[in-house]
Image 1 (tube, one colour):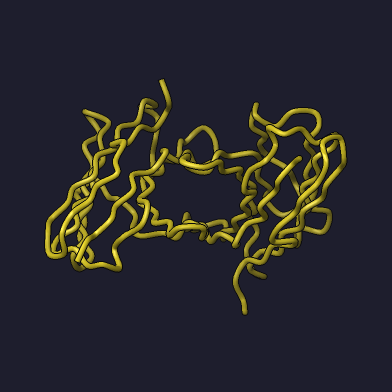
Image 2 (cartoon, helix red, strand yellow):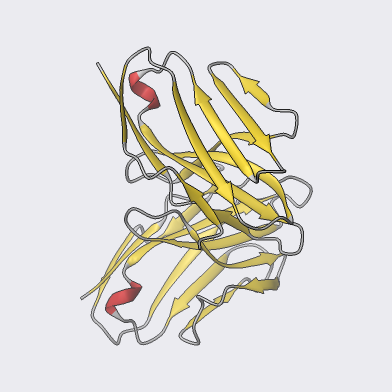
Length: 110
Length: 113
């Protein structure tokens, strides 16, 4: 089993739709959690960190459930420019490296 | 441009050749990471440096791979005796010690024929 797993995708949604991505992680020692966005043939960029109490940044809401080892990302009122691959990332206390999930591709259609 | 830079952006080589990639991190960042990414997958951690010290290496990093960061600034990743399975995007990222946000470079795309 991979350490970080995500919805396989792709997700094809119309503009204005709400879309949710799920991510699970297997290492209970994971301490930090993030969502990155990666456009086609570009480098990943941080979208948002994920905090225990959940956090929101405009149309984006991230949730963390430590008991279930589950992270989610909700995008409301999706825009064409949201089309990208969304990567779930965890960091463990023991190591300093970041573990990336395989990503979920989103296509927002006009 | 004060972001992370990588050179070259593209490299085509024949199987068995050695290749070396360079990464220049954001100047004040003391942590530097190397990742490998293949199509349809997320980046896989290879190794990371804090200043000039290489603190962690993935089991993915075979003996043919070596990375250095001699002065705690730029880093090089060398692959010896390349194999077709080494074909991938090699990404470098940097961060400041007290912060967890990583900034990625544009990557070096390697194709081994």
